[in-house]
Length: 111
Image (cartoon, rainbow, N blue to C red):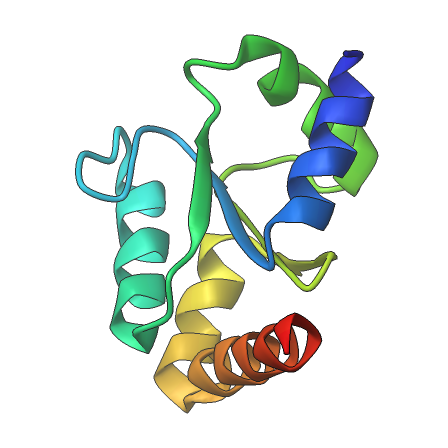
């Protein structure tokens, strides 16, 4: 599978997806740590891709997303943003709302 197809598939197959360095339990950078902590506080399950183990995705995703840095949060197939945006949304409560709406939509589709 081509890298771009893999990225598109990951984004479409996972309602809430965080591209990060490391894993939520063992992040490899401060920004990824903050982003995953903020997501975990929302209480909904989310998928992640460790870009350090996937250099092809690390190279291609910034071009596809038109977003140069990691982490990157994708919700319902749309790029939400990076660490600064995630943290700002977490502080205002907007992140929890976006995550809850995405989770509600996903459960409606499943029924």
